[in-house]
Image 1: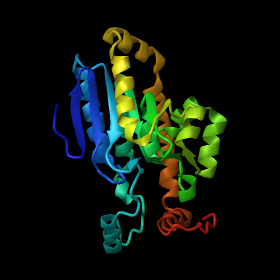
Image 2: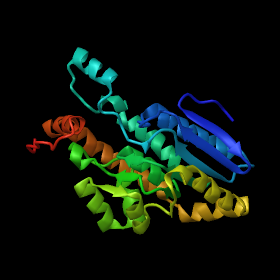
Image 3: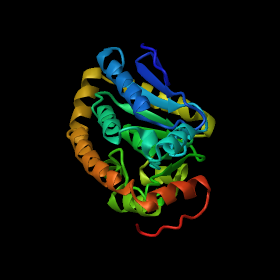
Image 4: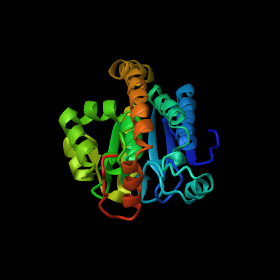
Length: 268
């Protein structure tokens, strides 16, 4: 297994494991998504690996993008740009890396032991299955930020939990508990928090007992066209995010979230 900066990668029997190592909140950026995609490509080339587990250190699975990164804020002050989305880097490049994850050929089980927020929810939903716990929180919090959903969630979330439940998550930005996630089909298995990764490993090992050729063939059928749909979705999402990231409401939404208060949106 290759060595990566922000993730740990191992092989356990026929299961490949990826552990995000940016605790406590595991914020993502282009580099992290690229590393995950590279590791999945490596798993695809390893004939011994039949399934993978995506987990994370710390209290969150992935809290999305760090709009309040001090380094970004310092750069904004120097350049007077004032764009809270700069910490993401070029979002189009980030989404190119995200689509690579959807091109992975082998089943992925996400171990969601804590918050999966915004793009972090998109990352969790990119997996085939999710093992979670009562303490976990799933949130598409984009509208509370004055933003538009991204990471292909406008395609993946409705396909997973139904259009109306996805609309509910998008329009309210509410946090869905682990128990609710299982009821909605957003997660598949509920276990105690300290058993989430073990539960994900157990499910991946069960998958890995099956014929590798049968798995590849069946998964290709079940996810046929998904990467292309996500690509089309991210193209639209990017256009909307680019438009909204320049608004006063987006800057207010990010500031209000940082200050833990209700936003004073003005529709401009």
